Amino acid sequence: MTSHSSLERTEASALPASVVPFEDRPVLLLFSDDSTLIFARRMRDCLRAAAPSLKVEMGWLVGENALSYRQMSLLLPEGPDHALQGKNVFQQLMLARSHKAIVTSRVYGPLGAQLRRTIMHVDNERPCVIAFLGGLDFTPKDGYFRRRHCDGVFVFPQSEVATFEKQAQSWPTRMWQEVGFGHPSVTEVQSLSSQELADRKDIYFFTQALSPSTRRARLHMLRSMAAIARANPDRTVWIKLRHLPEENQQHLHLEKYSYPDLLAELPSRPQNLKVTACTMDQALKTAAIGITCTSTAAIDVVRAGVPCMVHLDYVDNYLDPLEQPMRMLFRDSGLITSLDDMLHLRAHKAADKWIQNMFCKDDLGAQVLGIIDRFQHRPFQVRKDS
Image 1 (spheres, rainbow, N blue to C red):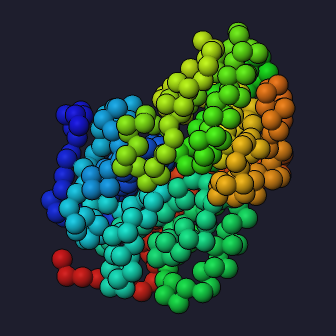
Image 2 (cartoon, rainbow, N blue to C red; image 1 turned 180 degrees about the horizontal axis):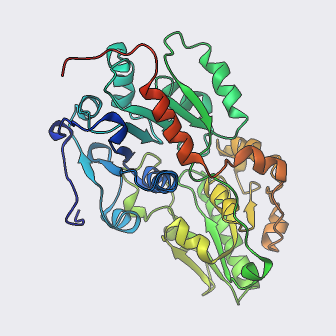
């Protein structure tokens, strides 16, 4: 991969010991695939909004990489600040005194292993480790358990803070930890005027790698999108891919039936039904309506002020393990949309109470920095000889 000249490509073992005081060290954001990179970019924006002079660095975990060159170029054209690799990458990061915090949306196994070491956990010079959820978590108990040794944990919806704390009561080795509510992709909902929406002509179907899970279900969604395209020749209906088929081979969530391949089977495909692998931010700049089944894109669509439809009555939905969890998360949202309403583009407004529970304030960066500051002054720290 190529990147700008200031790219610092370092193996973890080469990270220099820092003589910079803890409070002046940079924050490191970890990423290894498209989801974690999107999180890292948005978290960087939140931190910079809270502290414009703060140095925030992007750390690419090479050993976990599931990004193609195209995705890296599209999502992070300037390249990462660190290319981290080696079997001791997290041990070195914890000991390097190079960063005051590591912020991640995925608790990588070796990172969790370091935090489970009591002597490492109480080291007064190690970075604060803050973990967010990767997105809408359909198995939150598992995700919470993996974050049990992190110094800071952010969950959502807001009601899940109490769920996390209740589960944490069964963790005998829980140490210093603060729990907050929020996610950089789930900050306050923006507002678009009716005229702005009326001027837009793009309709997006946001796909998901694992769901719908069967070939018939995916063809059902493509046929539905084709019907919408034929009924609205003045609009463009986009099949928004998370990644191109050839880019999915190393991804955590492996796609079995690709939409481009299935689209080739549609007879008389309308010309205004198209495929794109643009970024979410690019799609939301022109979207008049966003449609999805079980994708976390639903949250992005609502946050952007774009009408959202969550369609769960697709063929074979009873075979899809993600359908019921999605239905539970959105049951009070007012966004679950029937086939008839979807085909006629009848979108409904999201319920205010659901929005208040789901979306956090815009001070998320300040909350993260507050945890880092309190971490520095936490009780029971062990000082090691320099």
